[in-house]
Image 1: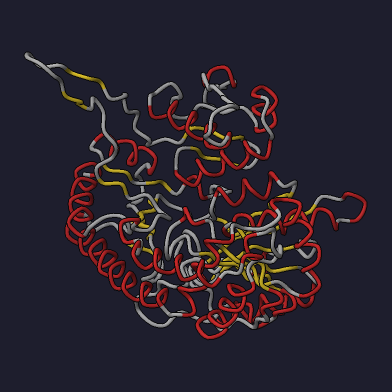
Image 2: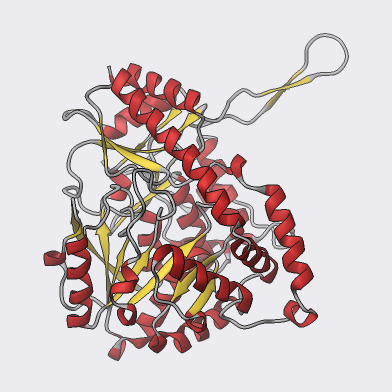
Amino acid sequence: MPGKWTTSDDLLLEIRREAKMPLRQQVENGIRSAIQQGRLAAGSRLPSTRAFAADSGVARGLVVEAYAQLVAEGYLTTRRGAGTHVAHGVPATRPIEISKPSGAGGSLTPSGSRLRYDFRPGVPDLAAFPRAAWLRATRDGLARLPDAGLSYGDSRGLSELRAALAEYLARVRGVAVDPRFVLVTNGVAQALALLAAVLVRRAPGGRPVRIGVEDPSGPGQRLLLEAAGVVVHPVTTDGEGIDIRALPSDLAAVLVTPAHQFPTGVVMSPGRRTELANWARRTGALLIEDDYDAEYRFDREPSGALQGLAPEHIVYTGSVSKGLAPALRLGWAVVPPHLLDELLKAKATHDLSSPVLGQAALASMLTSRVLERHLRKTRRMYRDRRDALGSALSRYLPGVILAGVPAGLHAVARLPSGLDETAVAGAAAALSVGVYPMAPYRVRPEAFPGPALVLGYAPLSVTEIVEGIRLLAVVIR
C-alpha cells in the first residue's frame, strides 16, 4: 500500500537565511527531526526535490544533497520511479523534557532515547578518529603551506596531496597514476556528480545518458546520479561481481565496487575483472570504480584496483570517509587524460576547489605513513568486531548466515525464508536495536532474493554487538 503523500508544508520546516547554519543543514535537520519526532510516519512519501525546492525557495541541488544524506543515514529510502519515502524501522523519539523534582533546581530527563545498539552500515567508529595525529598533521601541513597556498588554488587540488596520493595508490592499490591526473574531490559523492555532469554534457543531441549500477547498490548513489539527469540502469550481480552478460552495449558508464561490493560483500573475481575491462574497451563505455572498503580486508591482502587493467577506460575513486571520518569530505578521482579538462571545468564551476587545510593535513599523514599505521590499527579492531558478529549469530541465531568475504565495516545477514525483513527491523527497533533491511538497496525485488539484513558493526564494541544480536534473536524467535 503506498505511503501517505507529504507536502512541503507538512514538514513544518523553517528556513532561516540569516542563520549561520548552512541551508542544506537546515533542510537535513528539519526532515530528520520530523521523522524522529513522529511527524513524518514510516512510509510517508516526501515531495519531489523539484517541488520541495520550489516551495521552500532553495536550490534544487541543495535538496538533492540533503535527501541523499538522509538516505545514506537510513532515514529515507528511494526506489526508481516510486519517489522518496520515510524508511521503516526508524523509531520516533520524543524531545527531551524537563522534569523538576521537589525542592530547588531540576534535572534534564530524556523522555525518549536513541537506539542503544545501532547496526547502521557505512559508518566507521568515529571515536577511533586519530585526533592528536590529525592535529599534528594540520600543524605540519599549515607550516609547509606558502602564503599563496591560501588563495584560490588549482581545481585539481593541492599539488602535495596529489603527489602523495599518487605514490600511495600506486604502492598500496596498484593504481596506474600520474599526479597530473589526480583530482581531489569532496568525497566520492562529488566525483560521481562531476562525472555525471560531464557525461550528460557530452551526450549528442541531448540524448538520455544511461549509467549501469550494480543491483543491489547504495541508494544514495543512485539518487545522486538521477538528480544529475542520468538514467540509472540496474545490472544483476552474482557471486563473482557484476554480470557482464547483463550489460547493454549502449551504456555510457558503469559504476562498480569490485574490492567489496556494496552491500553484498562479494569481491569481483579475476576472470570477471578481465571480462569487464575488455567489455569497456569493446564498447567505449567508461568504468567508474568506487574502491569501497579496500583498506579493510581481514582474511588476506585485498585485490589490486581494477583500474590497473584499463587505465584509459576507468575512473578510479576513493575517500577517507571510512578510514578516517566522513566529516573531512576528502576524496579523489584518478581520471583518464581525455576527461581531465572537462572534469576540471565542472569542478571549478561547482565549488572552485576543495578546502586546502584538510588537503594539507592529509598530505602530511600520507607522506609520514601515519595514515597507514592508523588503518592497520583499525583493521585489527574491525576484524575483531566482525568476528564477534559472526560468533554471536552462530550462538543466538544459527539459522542466519553471513554473506560475502570478511571485509569492510558491514556484513549482510541472510534470514531464514519466510521472515519479513522490514517487520524484523521494526520489531528490533522497539527493543532499541537498529538493523536495516535489504529492501532499500534493491532496485528490483529479484536482486539478492530472500530476506536479509545489512548490519554495520564498526561503531559498536564487541560487548554491544553480542548484546544487540541476543536481542535480535528474541525478535526473530
